[in-house]
Image 1: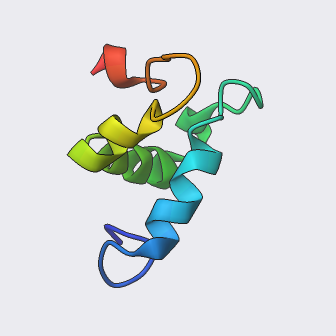
Image 2: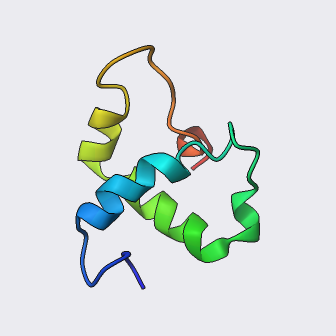
Length: 67
């Protein structure tokens, strides 16, 4: 599926930040191709890019600089 529910929803919005910490948690997303595909599609949404560094130090979204 493209999203966690039928369409982009609060489920995606609330889950994505947990997945975005995969490097800190030492998880190889390549082992989970469907999660990786979903993660990449969400990370490219303008609101996600804007909100990722709403507060705190400015960080690059993991994988964003690799695409």
